[in-house]
Each structure stands twice: as C-alpha cells, then as structure tokens.
Image (cartoon, rainbow, N blue to C red; front, side, top):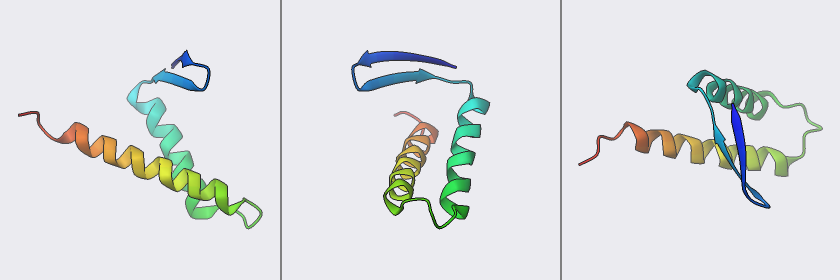
Length: 65
C-alpha cells in the first residue's frame, strides 16, 4: 500500500486488490454489525463511501467503447 498527499486534505492511495478488498470488507462488517454506540453519522459516512466504491467498481467492469 502507498499513500500520497495530493493536497492538504486529499490523499491518493495505491493498493493491491487484496488490500483494498480487506478494507472494504471491514467497512461492510462495521455497517452491518456495528454496536449501538457507533454514531449514526459515522455509519452513514461508511455507507456513502461503500456506495461510491461499488459505483466505481461497476464502472471499471464496463468495457470501454
């Protein structure tokens, strides 16, 4: 895994597929099984991030024209 600071609040990451899959799996687990004391706002942020990830992954699987 490599992280690069592009701007003060923007990072660019380079991951092996298995590294990214591990992070996404952990995020899905938290969203599905989070204890009651996890703030709703945090879960909403994770849901949004996972939806963006799913959209990007779907776009990657579409063959370019």
